[in-house]
Length: 202
Image (tube, rainbow, N blue to C red; front, top):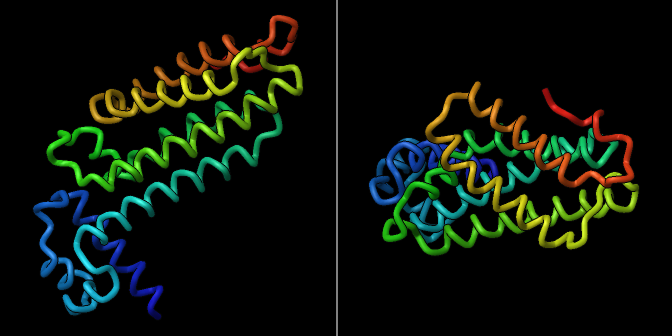
């Protein structure tokens, strides 16, 4: 029951933080909406900031879980990379609190929230690196510096999140993603590979 109650409080807080932000979310209103005593929230979390961090961590965990599930369904490294990028862009609109970190000014950010956002980024880079290493080993990719390539792809994805997800339509985002993936896949493909055309996205 304790875990169920914790999860419920986090889910309610997730909606409230996404709507009002950290500073405007009131702990009394959160307790009311979650149908618990304010003391219960403090007993479980210690502070409103800790509730906020729990929300961010849940959103980050959901993104990584969805990415891992999507790439597990693919057999070949280029397909895995395509699945990773598309899954990330499908998941981010559901992670509104993480997405809001991209538009909040530095003065409005809770410092520990940036650590969660950065941890998500490095987990994504690790997954990208695993895919690139597999692709190199199987002769799909030609990469001189896998870590640099992994970080470059990760930073590109992160940079596009803010501009595309916040300011563009879904159709335009899908169009941009396809073009971006074409560039990435063709750029990574080994010059000796005859498999490139298979992974060109229309």
